[in-house]
Length: 225
Image (cartoon, rainbow, N blue to C red; front, side, top):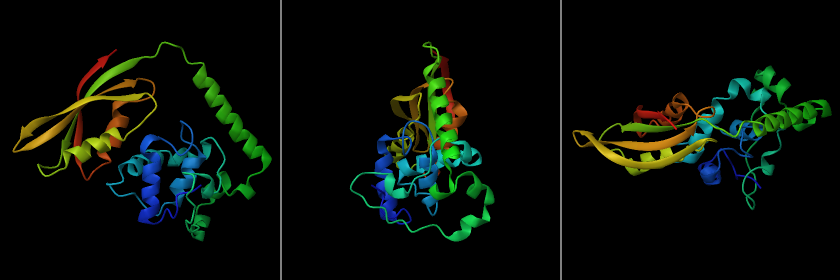
């Protein structure tokens, strides 16, 4: 298992393909697996790698609380698609500059059994809490207007980037292109969200992160279901 060399375009392409139908490296919530792969990258994925870029921006938002994410960090070779060997070069010793990172989630050798047990208990508690949620789930139907920069923007690619955003509690619906003026068209796309999992601010942050294609996002309609 692995992604090849994550510091090269080839490795990033493997990561992008791996995330085409996944929100996270492992499971359905952000975990230390995402942090391990995130820390291995040398920078932000390019805009054409929309799945990797969507994942990168999402995991970046957890940097302040990454020490509390569930799971235990494993070597990069234990993540990713089967049949691909990990060849990512080890990160430079610059990690020593951040003592907090070393203390909170250092290498496997530095984590004792007690720390691993605490993290597993947190994951179990999270899953138990999730399982006890009431059957009645509040949902909303949202209509979004996504505007490009100009009439030369590839609208098919813009829509592909928007639909690449996959979150627990988010379902994309129908879409269409509407004229704005001067030959420019905007993407109008519908979605249904679970209110306690997905918000419009979160959607705006993720959509506008595709800054090569998206100028802005507005909520055209919002209705409770």
